[in-house]
Length: 335
Image 1 (cartoon, rainbow, N blue to C red):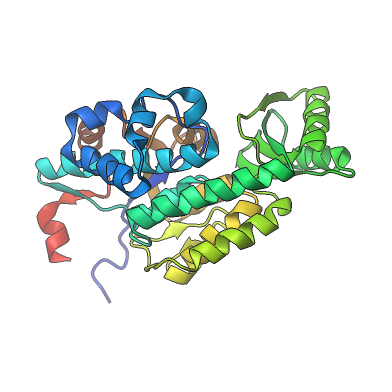
Image 2 (tube, rainbow, N blue to C red):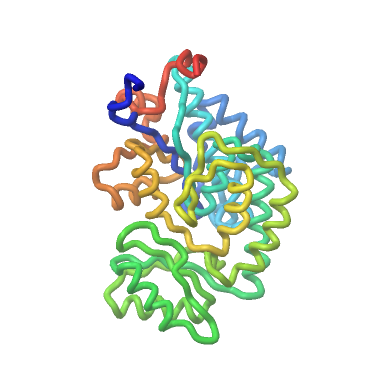
């Protein structure tokens, strides 16, 4: 019998990557100033895209940064710059980052795929630009949007969407945490659903996104995106990704390809995704990217979760906390 057969499982580290809505002018500017690794990420993004994405991230204007075609590569590039900044800082201390799982919220799943090596950074940028273009084109013909519903359980939100739907429809698009749901809908249905939710005592916030993403009405957009995805080269993710849709672990190139192709028309089950990571033994979560949205959601799902954010003294916090997944370089060399 192996000597460690009765040993407690080793705690794990998961990296979380934020999605659309976390953008803000000035994001990434500080790490660009202090980190060569971050500067390299932004320089490559500028070269791949053929315009100064870095300048847009650092200076705005906000309305241009909130244009979906710009937002998506901006968040991916900034998140990867933070990840490379973190790796650089740890490397300088003789440490190496070895997460057991990665996951991204909606758009963030594309960043997670890049971070896990399932798709390279340049292709990831091109992919999210195409995703943004498809979503923008689609919104011109069938406008709609998203709204955050706070204070109702997911079953009540589903009922609200059913009551609001008629010639146009509304759906549950994202289940973030208990009492925190996002709905999607075509314009009139979304407005009816928002009014019904308010009547039931919910706090309702219309999000600055003009596309009813993560809803069945996006099937045609998903098919168009899938054709572009099929032209790109994918590899097996290391470490596994956790699916936004099913909450299962994605371990092969084909599974990641399918996830990124189809998630635009499927609801994001973030609470389920997060619980999978907990059930897999994850003890520490690090949000890597602009903002603190996923850190706040994580604490709402699990009050006892250890949640760090790479923007908050990243390497120092990780090391002082004795974080799992941060190991001496020689440990990685022996594996």
